[in-house]
Image 1 (cartoon, rainbow, N blue to C red):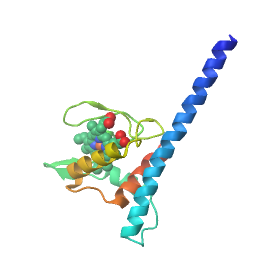
Image 2: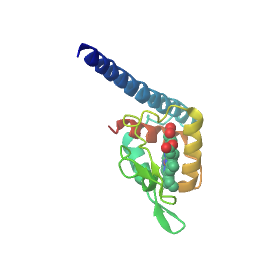
Image 3: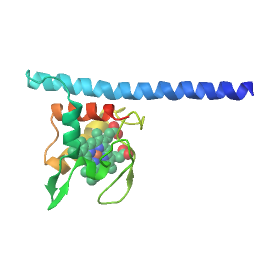
Image 4: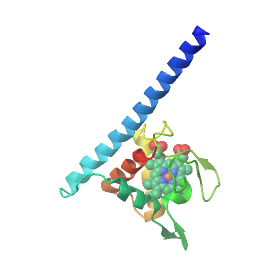
Length: 140
Ligand code: HEC
């Protein structure tokens, strides 16, 4: 009995450690993008979760169909998404829910470039990325 509760205890400790580490890693991305955005535009007042949320849900016409980041990632980044073309499930984007998000710079940049181009026809700006990640961190 004692052994089991000790194991459980260490599992919980590990789980919470992971959760903090991953939100912290996402926060590093938000901070980096914010520094770049500020370098580009000194008037940039810092990332806004609200603007990030608006960006996430903003629909643009793609091949005649209103499409947003939320079309694949769903309106709630804490939920599992679904690819609008392939129907494949997409694990949640919110780092508090999915600890694998915003851990790897290459993966993050690759996905930003691809999806921003898909939706807006260009890569996202540092400001848009800072807002976007800040919004995702705010989703629990
Ligand atoms: C056509 C479907 C689709 C749309 C639309 C879409 N995404 Fe994605 N997104 C995906 C898929 C698929 C993945 C990768 C799934 C995985 O890694 O589990 C992903 C992953 C990501 C990641 C990776 C995060 C990480 O560290 O793992 C980011 C960032 C991202 N998307 C941003 C965006 C943004 C910003 C938009 C809107 C401009 C957007 N996505 C729109 C399908 C989409």
